[in-house]
Image 1: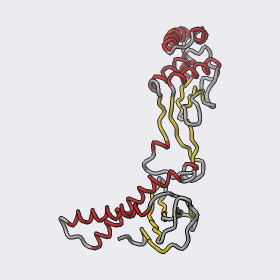
Image 2 (image 1 turned 30 degrees about the vertical axis):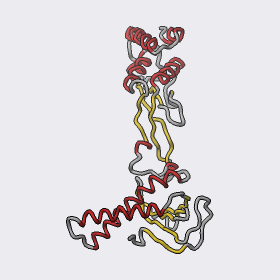
Image 3 (image 1 turned 120 degrees about the vertical axis):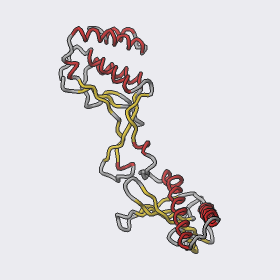
Image 4 (image 1 turned 180 degrees about the vertical axis):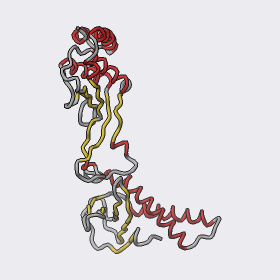
Length: 276
């Protein structure tokens, strides 16, 4: 049913020590490939609870792993799917041996690659492989859990507009979003004043900005260890606000006060942050 390039059943020479498997008379070996965002790898998995991933660009280098999957069940499942497809196509046309072979190869390769991503990849020790289908795990745009990113930007613009003195008008107010590792807040590269720092803290607490990306760190390009988790960032230019007339800044203070009250900020803090 299966070609040796895909599945091998051979007498078992020895049993690796794995507590979830017992000794069998035959050893099932399933061989296939899987594609990541940057490369294609060969792998094999055995019914004794072991498996190996081979790196095509590094000669004999490989990675071994344990698993707890029942390969006999998987083998039967693939056989049944192949036979079903052959029978279905035979009902309308005579199928050549070469076509049957193609059906076997395609169904087997597709199911085994699916099996790798569903059953094996997440059980590997870090780093995991990155598939074409998990882009959402590798990044998300800057957004807010409460309100929108646009509303947050408008609030921050108002905060900058009402800043009485901006000492570095060519700088930016930069806000980092929350990630699994870092809380949202003022970026280390941001312009800072005590007042703006407090307003940004209030804004992050209210809008709850989120978003992340993975920056390459010179490791494996398609594995998590080859990247660093980073916050997404929004930037507010200070240049225009630094040139804003005092009257306009005072009007902005009135609007800022309304927004802070609506956000249920303590009255004393509102008075302090909107004093001119």
